[in-house]
Length: 205
Image 1: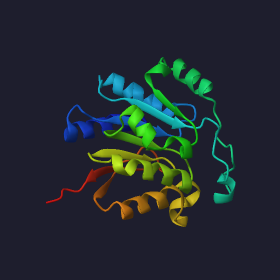
Image 2: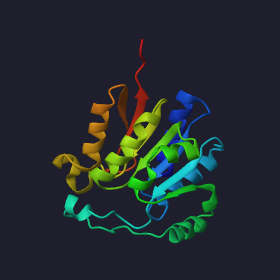
Image 3: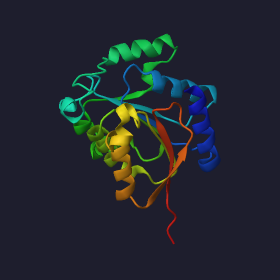
């Protein structure tokens, strides 16, 4: 995972210079991914990148079991206090990360964008399993994609959702169909069930 994030940062540096943009993770669980991204940025002496973790910290939302028979409401519950403990064991100060705690329906809005001055995306890590949650995330992010950034979709092939045409696979393809001003180039991801893309606004004449 650290090697992947290092490759992402180097790729963005070539395109954007040192103004890489923010790291935003949706579906933090115990902080494994966001911790690896943070440590990689620190190792590479990246100081411009802010870190945001979006999660209810109550597991998958109500209605998940109706959306997919292999998932249940409340799966992957991990209180923020436990996430912080996991990060501290890796010598990461949880206060260096901005936590947006709550259900996406309550936190993914203009108020959050204004409060944290969101607008320059760097690396976006989406790990929320379901179509409905990933769709809410992508709808939220769409107007913020004004510069090149990298999207990582952790559960692209989870339970063959890509074959079944649902989950993050479905929401991302709908995102591209709706936002024709954006183009996506697949890049090497970090494991076999994920997909990652360089997202770039199309140049208009």
